[in-house]
Amino acid sequence: MTRFGLIGYPIDGSGSPALFGRAYPGSGWTYDLIEGSDFEKSWQTFLSSYQAINITSPFKETAFARIISDGGRLSPECEETGAVNIAVKTSEGVVGYNSDYMAVRRLLAREGFSSGDVAVIAGYGGAGKAAAAAARSLGMDVTVCNRTSRPLGNGSSTRPLEELPLLAGIADILIYTLPGPVPEIGDGSCCCPAILEANYKTPSLEGAAQKYISGRQWLLEQARSGYALMTGEEPLL
Image (cartoon, rainbow, N blue to C red; front, side):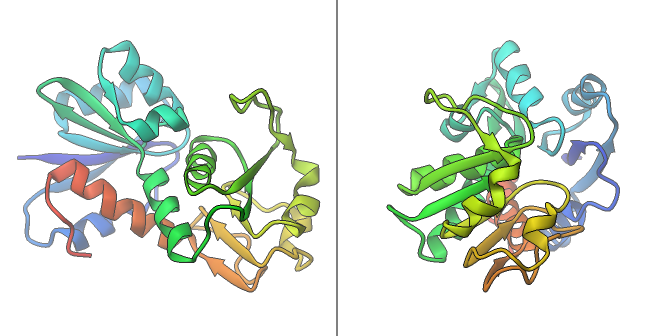
């Protein structure tokens, strides 16, 4: 039986199994939560028992490095982001993809964002890197705020998180990938006209902007791309 799953920690309560079931009702495929804080153990479970997996926090960047070290292949958007959230076994080894990048790019384009618009990214983990790369691919001007300073690969670094309220106030959209709220953004004082939030389980910023794009929309878009890559079939959802 072909098996699929999700690795990450914690992932209890993930919406991925339900989405997979909706995409392929009656397929007979299984989709499991492979929960554990030990990346190596989860990765070995994938290699021994699963055809393809989704990868979530905190393993996206670790999976990127692992695929390289094992001689696998990375798609162009993975090379751009430094993070992997889908791994598929093939005859040529494991191939990594980043459907977060695909989802954010599709959502931004659908809302009409394009060259010259300003995006501020909150957080620079796997989702933040994918969001920044997707916005840049549309020609947007991108600034990233993070709790710790991190290089951006173009000679610049992330901005301190304390600057987020000011920067969001002069942006066209805030893409929020942090797991919890920043008080100055969530208290109603955000002047940014649009927010795209990654967190779909416990969102922090719903109602904080005139245009709110939810984490569930993000999840659905990355699921559409991801399931096609994992199974070779187009989803029904």
